[in-house]
Length: 86
Image: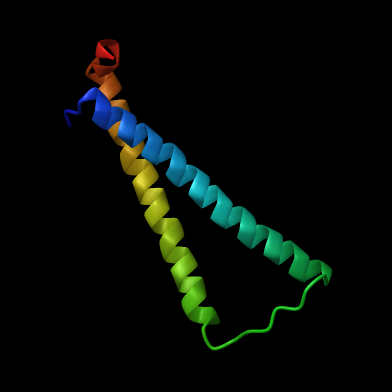
């Protein structure tokens, strides 16, 4: 995998932003779960709750794949010595 320094920088930004997005989604779900378990809020299931859960799972999976691919591209570029050209 040969990348220019601009592509490597773009992948680095993409990896960081996808990790931040994944962290946001997981933290939001954790906060909601904590509030629900302490009785602070009552969550009523609606007809779309299953679809929303699958959508959240799919988004988490896609963000993880983006972060993994970006990290692999960055490591591949660093092994080939592309970082010295920046």
